[in-house]
Structure formats: structure tokens, C-alpha cells
Amino acid sequence: MDWLPLEPGLYHRPRAENARREAQSQVVARHGDLVILSPSGKTSMVEGGFGCVLIAAKPMFDGSYKLLTATSTGIAHQGFVVAVPLGVYADIAERIAKEGALQSTVTGELRRLAVRPKSLDGGQPSNGSCRAPHAKPPK
Image (cartoon, rainbow, N blue to C red):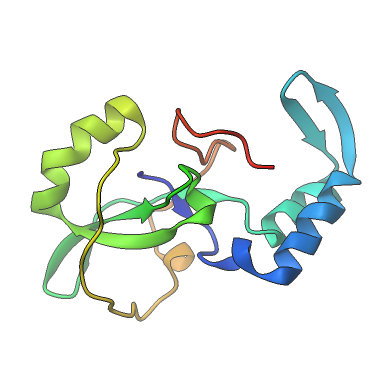
């Protein structure tokens, strides 16, 4: 999927679970599936590993790559960042745009970026939807 976790890996840390639990005590209102949190509750959700960005293709390693998220849940902040060569991305971009994500087996090599993904320029903040259209809401 095109959305990247704001803080990759944070969602799975014990302190993040506590922050998400704290956010649930900061609910201001509910309207169906929409939950409105206080500013403190929103901060707790970010500290709990929620939050996503869209990032344009970036030059790195030996060419230009599009950063995507690989996730088994369909929820970006529960996954990990993968760098896809632009040639490969061109083959799948239309499907991702149409369906929000695609199902695939991921293989590759692990390389460390010199900077954290959230500090890359050109990021676009999430509107709150860091899920593929078919993904179930988090518990």
C-alpha cells in the first residue's frame, strides 16, 4: 500500500499499546464508527503507533524507489516499509491506486536507510485512513 507508517515498528512496542489504551479514555464523542478524541487522546494515538504519510519516489541506493508498506493486516502502521524500484512500481501503481493495496509475496534484501522515513521531505499527512479499503478496523 502507498501509505507509510509515521513511526515504523512503534505500533508493536509495549509502551505503544499503553498509549492506545490511554487514548480510549480521551474520547470526546462517537458518531457511528467515527470516534472523536481530545487533543491529548490524538497525541496518545500517535504515541501508540498510529499515523501515516504518503511519500513521493526518492533517489536512494542505486536508483529511484517508491516507498510502500508491506502488511499482513492491510493496516499501514502495523506493517513495515519496503523500497520498490520505480520500474516495478510502474507495473503495480494503477492497481494500488484503484484497489488501495495489492496482495503479494515480498522478497528482497534488508538495507538500512540513513534517515528515518518520517523525516523524508515530500510527505503528505494522513487523513486518518491508513487502511486498505478491505482491511478490518483495528481492535
